[in-house]
Every structure is written in C-alpha cells, then in structure tokens.
Amino acid sequence: MSTRNIPASLRQQIIDRANGQCEYCRLPDSIAFYPPEIDHIIARKHGGQTTLDNLARICWRCNHHKGTDIATFDPQTNDLTRLFNPRTDNWHEHFHLSDSELISDTPIGRATIFLLKLNRPDRVAERALLIEAGTYL
Ligand SMILES: [Zn+2]
Image (cartoon, rainbow, N blue to C red; front, side, top):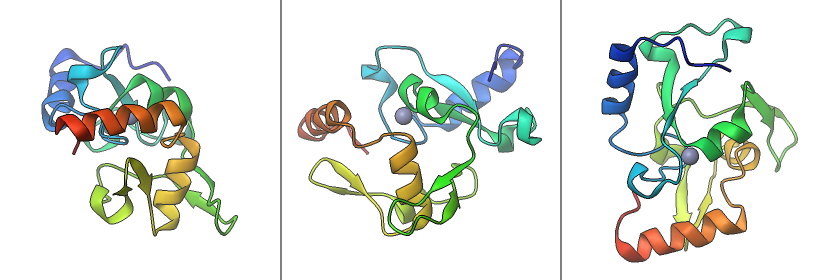
C-alpha cells in the first residue's frame, strides 16, 4: 500500500485535516514514535482512488494492522463487516471509552477495534497515560 506517490500538497491537506491525530485510534502525533502515514481508506487494489475523500491520516500501528483490508468479521456476530471510514462515519458514533479501552455498540466499530488491534494491552496502557495527561480525544 505505497503512498509515496501522493503529491506533497495533497499529503499536507490530509495531515492538516486530521487535527494532529490518527483518524482511527486517535493517537496524537506528538507522542507517536513514527511519523504519521497516509492511508487509502479503500485500498487501490479494491478500486480506491488517491483523492482527499479516500485518504486518511493513520498511525503506523493502525496502518500495519489495516494494510489493504476493507472489512473483517464482527467478533460479536461473525458477520462480514466493513471497517470504519473516517470520511463518511462519525468516530464518536462507533467508538467510546470504557476506562482506557475503546468499546463499540456498532458492528463497524467492533470490526475495526478487532482488526486494528485497538485494545492490545500496550495500546490500552498508552491510552491510559494519555487520558491521565489530558491529551487523548
Ligand atoms: Zn492509529
């Protein structure tokens, strides 16, 4: 999923739009170990275009787990479910905090939490520190 060919001006628009955080897990760039990456929400191999409405700012961990996937199985129902789309879905409708874990009442939220491993123990611990410092969400 190379994004090397994204023009610098388009890349800057994506970064500016995202308010300094991953559009999936909301990790602030300021504490991320690696610089933010650009995600094709619908990967090019599935017909996704390199346009503002199909690109998102993503942290390297979310990008590593998402790859070119666009769907997975909802762990609660086992139904094939598309992933969260930062351009068309409202983050707060699909994710909320329970202590420092992200939980969801929607199939899209549950599928995304599962595939992107948003509640891996290290990520939950990191989120707890961010919440304590007042720098999460
Ligand atoms: Zn992320």
